[in-house]
Image 1 (cartoon, rainbow, N blue to C red):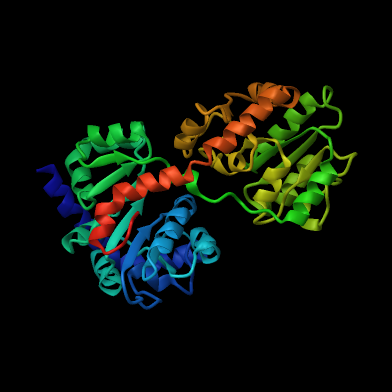
Image 2: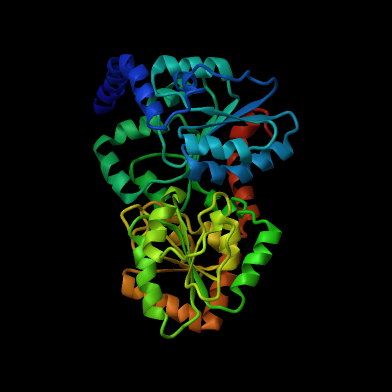
Length: 427
């Protein structure tokens, strides 16, 4: 009875809210959260024509999901010369990323808001032959419309945290109804699969974490050689994707370690480069900055990597990387990219948003999770002084992130019935 009530109440609530959508979209545009030139896509009005032939729809909510889908997209397009792939996401940052990353025969559109007539308009235009939804985002109206049209669908890289499972327990039947749009659900790991099963969701399998299949960040060879030459033999560690408060933490850790390592270089790369001037106020005006074409200097303890699109450059220059957003209540950022570049990776206590990746890299010996500032300082000290440990972690990091072929093959094998039904070759 609860499921019927909720399944009726949700569309009703959406219906009452629909007249407010134009104002909502205008407000979000003013906040920089919508693209003004493509805002109509959010109401199901497509700005691109549907290509002829088979079309696979992949929904990746934001940046992380979009990156994790790239290797799968490449593999499917390589195997199917006539295939086109529609990729949807809901954020401007993911759209900007995909504009540069998507290969030929892959099209990006913004996901329409979960209004029934927007969903129908979107699906009427694109008529996908199959659909793959990544991770944890669920839109009941879109999925209901997908199911009504008998479009084969799967949920891949599916995540379900303990907190989410606890919340869904109150409406288990509705959760199962929403997920019934998927013929198969590929969970990231055993814990996620168990949570789906505990809620009564059938057809749950495991295939590995697609985030480990994403290509490593690129680096300009000339710039990389220059940066490493400027660092020379100095001991160096990096604090990556920092947020406010973490630069001060890096400064304190550096001050703690400097008596033992007088020529220590601390490389700081903020999550948001717009904060660069504020960070310089913390580190000192003489700190060299990448955005000004400067390089590390022998008499300067810090280097600020305040440039866009060069994480691969910085990761390759630092054998030890601490991942930010984990010492502030941000949930942590992905440790995969530094691991792919062969760094010994350290992360702080708050890893809510990347727990699946931490759980994959810690047992592999590629990552150390610390609980406090003091523990961070001790860990960086140990990795700077213990070359054997550092190199062992770096080797483990490369090994753990070179499983892309295995994970892709497992994923494609599990998806084979869905894709074959849509005329797409999976393996």
